[in-house]
Length: 451
Ligand code: MN
Image (cartoon, rainbow, N blue to C red; front, side, top):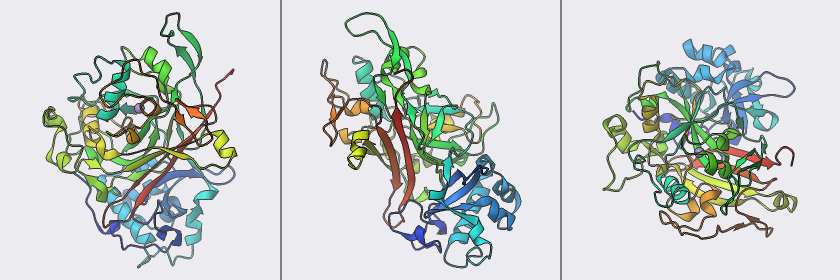
């Protein structure tokens, strides 16, 4: 099931694109993430591959005959879904091709007289959404997050009995997904009555939060009515990116029962523009989160040997925050938390298998969010709702006050203020392999309408 480590992951591989060879860069030749970008002026957006500080334009490579068959047609397209729809073996072959073109050994591209026309500096383009996202589903796969949030919203009953049997998710809104860098307007909405009684009100959200998540883009989809088995599930994943599921907690608390989140989530979701392919992640696979012995085993449709041995991904994730005052005073962003994707209770393969188990068809370019990635430690809590809460894991402290975070300027935060900028970063490291990174997923809060 899992993609294998091969020559394209060799730590000895270097590129003739010099900027790809700096240590600790996000885009060495071992990564080769996809993006969609728009050049200067009103240029048409096109698809490319990140290498060092450059983007390799796939259409230019295709015009000069570097690809063949289905891959050539897909590379000529301005739609990344054409690449996503390729078979797993064509996608693996494309990665091998790209690695050869960019390698400092035997590269036909390095010596081509048209090579300059095939590259553009990342700093000179606008990185846009990788594709038009048809459907977006957000899961809830961290048991630490689910238990913490459950403790706050339902102190008597934090983790509902279905959690350890079923990957919980809800259908999100695809139309409001934006690429990193777009500002996020504070939503207006219906706010719950105060604790001491009264009526609900309508106005600017007062408890605006981020959620640290990983996003997965679907590759080839499945036919309506034809579930994807757990063993094949990962062949249907194109790659991963960073995702911020902006959340209006006051609106959420008031609206989420009985049908789940609605307007508290649908006003905006930010994704990083780079998609790191599932093939690039092969060296960073790991055993998934180990369930306590007393937990139920997953039902057979969510269980396989491959998933049990290597269904996890060791991706380190960080959240950084800067306020407008910090930026004015030239103070660097502060790190709010650091966690790892390997801590998730449900794996990517289980999410895909479960999502399609009723016959629901997934389509190329659909986006699955992992759910907030929180770990067992306080320092790995993936949203402010958890970070500024006094409760210890699984044990809420009734009646306690929320504890504000203090910024270097002396400003205090329980939730986000206008002007705050949240940045998510992610990278993978493993002994004997080159580090690869995900770029950044940034968004800055602007004031609500009419405020
Ligand atoms: Mn979420």
